[in-house]
Length: 237
Image (cartoon, rainbow, N blue to C red; front, top):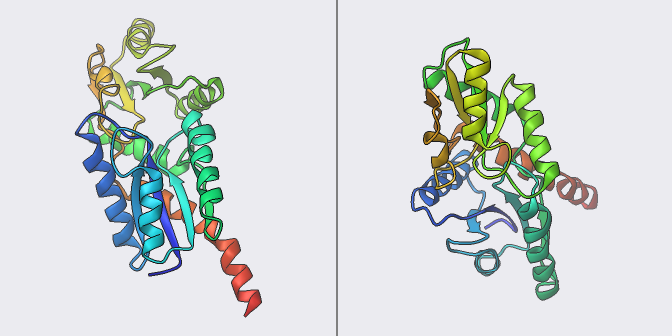
């Protein structure tokens, strides 16, 4: 195998619907890039965890692990949990290089996929759109999500935290009197995204899932992380 491997790290969910979607995503990354070793790991709830996946990759010959967080915002897990895990691994495995890439969002391909989901759901072109996100305890990440919503002409609503999505849907309907559609800004199904369907929205789009746009973003993050090493290797030759 190549000495460089891709480790896609997801949050993890107790909901059994989530893991197959993420497994399909990583399988499509492999299919899109033959020869690339790509493995899925989780920060919690599911297996394998990050250290277990890393040791598996090393056993197969990896000496450089590019870690792509399957997260849409740079919140606590991307800024604290994952870097801490990787710092511990660097100490334990000094001969292995670990590189953490940026998270998946914000990215134009994500916005294109959200719009495609709206069309697939049959949303009216004049519909009022609420961007449905899970929400985090990190104010900066929530503000970023609000900016994403604004750039798409939508209003932000969170499954957890403020503004709570049910109230946002009610407020938007009262203000506009138009069809209200929740554009799901989540990768996979789960208990929190289920709260979107519990609102009085007319339509709720499917999660973003294992679509080509997500695959392309994962590979773009990987390629950006590996390009400097490839340049150094070519200079050494």
